[in-house]
Amino acid sequence: MNWSETELENEDTGNDAAPVPAKPVAANGNGPLFLGDTGSLPAEARRALCQLLAGPSVDAQRQPGQWSALLRHEDAVRSLLCELFLELVLDRDGGIAFTRQADTAELDSPTLLRSAPLTFIESVLLLHLRQQLAEADTRGERAVVEEPQLVEAMSVYQKNVSTDQAGYGKRVSAAIAKMRENQLLSKLRGSEDRYEISPALKLLFSAEDVQLLADAYRQLREGDQPITGDAVSDDSDE
Image (cartoon, rainbow, N blue to C red; front, side, top):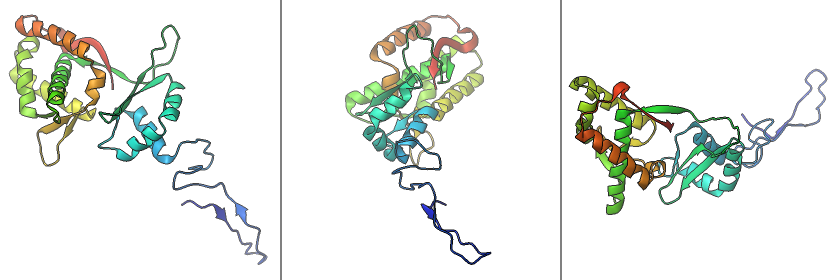
């Protein structure tokens, strides 16, 4: 419960005590939001900042209030992230924003964002999704994919990973689930196996990155080289 002023009554003596002012707590986000608050951002902008830090992104479609607040207070949010050696990546046209570690060159700086190695299957799935996103952009359409099609697209790499078809299928399903957890794939309403690809992939993978990865994985498909450990050396911020 929030209140700006509390009146206390002395029941023992029956005398009215003077009103005791309490620190104002603003429910509407204008001014302090809680006792001891020295921040300056309104509530919705703070929620956007928290979402950026928690990851993976702020999305204009799924979080319209936070997205609008982020645009209004972009300079302040950027400044606060810089205090933490982080950089704001914001695509107004795509309606997506996320954070990444700032390039501090020789400066010794802490790393706040978690980084996890991608498995081979996860990396080729990301590449496939990025290519599907690019093709949809050229058509001016939303990038929508179906899970059976993703499983089929990944099947060409099975010989590089495992001869166990059932086990490989489980790995592909796990990779798709990870893309959903990180909001790179969003299930379409009313559908169990259709997803929209997040435009954030355009910012994570440039056209040059896509071409380099595509060339490398094409060589794997055409050759017989197995992938030991089912992992790649690159890390991906989550």
